Length: 458
Image (cartoon, rainbow, N blue to C red; front, side, top):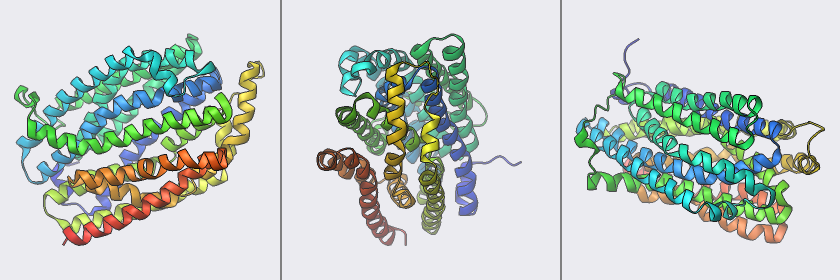
């Protein structure tokens, strides 16, 4: 089989490229999502439902620091895709070197800050009552592994920018499989409880880092950087920052939403209500994996062809990606509407020897999570337009519209809704905020995407 190079992004048929890029991307996201899902099932069955809530409290903090790496990766990869399309490899190399330096400096600093203010951060994100102690154990251990996660997420986007989706897929699979294997060893065999769950996650991050490092030092990568490329270049850093800020802002908003949701739900129903959201949060990560896979596949194809000024291919990439993603989102929607009870039951232990508190929490979750899940995913069939539309502006290097459209759903619509509707409708107000925000953001994104296509892709 001939070696695939980045130039193929500008030559092969769009449908073939999207499928070729999206399938491994989707598999990688699926395995990572399954990791989060199965990890939660293991924790729920072997430790208890309170432990799931504890992990849910820690996730926004660790994911935010990890997302710093993704932000640097996505911002730099947009530059790399366009630079490769314009045959400017020196700029691509400089960008990658700057990504490595920025990721190390920023994430290590954030870990130090996160450990320094641990006593304030955990309660602020909903780690109260019975949730606090297990959350602190998990948080402390996982935070040490987060710089490895950040480097992996940064490197993964660069691998995709090179047009190597299969290697990117493997990089996503390794930490997931490693985590699940270590879950069994550390939780089930060694009986380490929350510490075991945390160490399993951290080992997974380290394994991923080792593989990504192998890729870039091997013959498979086009990123043959030298020491000079690691020195920070102000124009390159500025461009990485402006584009990467889109991804970072999105994750920052996700972390803020976790903070708001955990506190609102704790006030409405205590630890049990937080556990309901923890399960739904896992499904938000897991269920939409094929849609996210198409979105990831879309970015390097659109960016490369835009850099090469092949605008007819960019238009076709947009239309094809939206079509594929919408069909997949509809399939996901049907499954979630039919089987929410069975999905919820997967996370709950049927061990009769559980504590009275865990038994009570399980009963509450089983009764309330299915209906909440139906509301949260009610607008799923239309979200592809919003995701692809926002991603397009990021792919072509237009940071401001990319930022505004990326934040439209969660920042501009969802947060105001979640602050108002629960006061009017209680628990129902929480769940209906999700589809309302989806619909509003999709209409706004569709308008701006259509206008941009008419103005520039001619």
